[in-house]
Amino acid sequence: MAVKQNPHSLLFLYEGETEEEFYKKLFNTYIPAGHIRRNYSNLKGNFNITKKTERKINLYLDSRSFSSCQNIHVFIAYDREGAREKEPCLDAERLRTIFIKTNSRVVSINEIIATQDLESWFFHDIEGIYDHLRAPHAQRKFKSLSQR
Image (tube, rainbow, N blue to C red; front, side):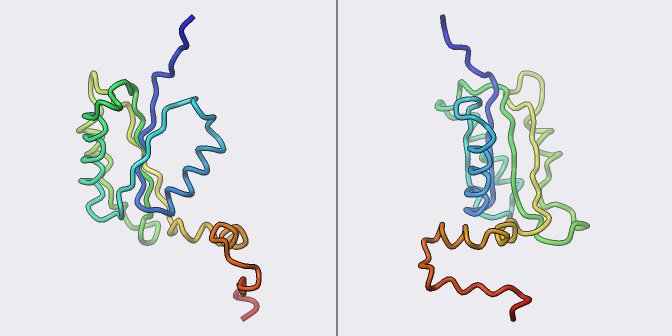
């Protein structure tokens, strides 16, 4: 009996290395390996993010390596770079107009917008950061604001 393959795939675009570390850890924790095909790509900052996202999606769709990927769900993770009231810098509606149409392999385009810089989310686990950086215990001299 042939193994039934999940027809859905995930293209996850992110703006920097911190996002890659954070979201890969989440995916590995909550989405079992082999459950859905996951592909990642770094946008390297959020300047011209709409054009860079469009280019990455086109490269993905044109690649023979991913030609078997159907029902593609695109997620774009980036920092808002300002207050919550500031409009996001990605034109997701434009991308949906370009890529989501009849007979398209792309079925959804979703934004994950950090209202703070994602890097600040990690500070609740400063010991984990030190461990990841392999900082010797003798050099871990973090002082909270209340200790200053």
